[in-house]
Image (tube, rainbow, N blue to C red; front, side, top):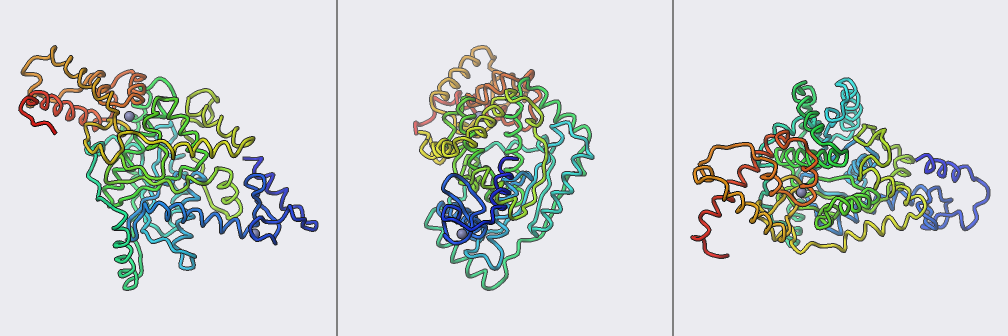
Length: 462
Ligand SMILES: [Zn+2]
Ligand SMILES: [Zn+2]
């Protein structure tokens, strides 16, 4: 970080006669102030134009967001998501070159409870962020992570998607233009802060849950799953169809390597692609994926984009404490010396595809209970065998569909998870610590699977 700022200031100080090499590569007139990588030097104005253009181009090219749609921006206060918020503000401003056409809202998930932060510290962060959110004029939601404990089990089921096709993009565009000319587009103001509702007991439960995991790698993994569940739930409740995530290219390169090291090779493309539809109705979009962390740092510095630091599990820990942290450190070092390599790493994800694409597997039972990615076919077979083995031991009464709900034991839950989440759960001291909505959904899926096995002889093949 320090290095980045220093380079920028050095460039600013040089006010002697501009030689060709010091001029902006785009307009070829003004002295460049930003050097993203060797040979890519921009003046302030051109840098801003390019930065804004890239955001619109990423969204436009992929046509993932429909005109008039409600989009929830997940803002953590970090540089990348703060910059994303600024891009949306710029894109919606009346004098924008090519106006964005969706209705944004902001969500911040306060994870302080999982990180042993005091209520006072959490309140300070929330106040700073609220100022930024209020200034944007967009509706915002501030949700403490503790609320994940009260989620319904339907969060981890796949809801049917609204089936948006490329052809319907034109239809919604026409519709949008018609409405827009009649009335000015203003999203309804509905700010929601449930921060003050946090109870000490819930914070304790959340900490207990996180502390059930022995390694930091598993802690980080479960935390990111819980965060995602809460994001999806809030989006559903507030009527948003899309979630916008601030993952930049540097982060995604690290995520790709982390996915591979955690045994999520089959899910890499879903974890890092521009759009992710594993929940069916709520689609996650990553419009910052073409920006490097360095580029974002430059932009935020030059154009005064405020960001708010909030600690995470990785703050103040040693480099090798978790696989995620180690990989991130590696990528950041790589970025300094070999910036092109990082984008090569993350572009690999675009070329990867799983045989079972999200759209073809619409059945919830084929989805991992935690991360909702599709389970691969070989795993399905193991699951079947698992269930059959279990049946031999259980009595007839117990496996009837009217059986009493009981807390599934660790093997039960394992059979409903992808390989990577199985490793995470294995790290847990007791599965009973998992939030109720996850255990309940596990029970529902198991009952359904037992029932299917019982009537399997009477079912016609697909
Ligand atoms: Zn220029
Ligand atoms: Zn999983």
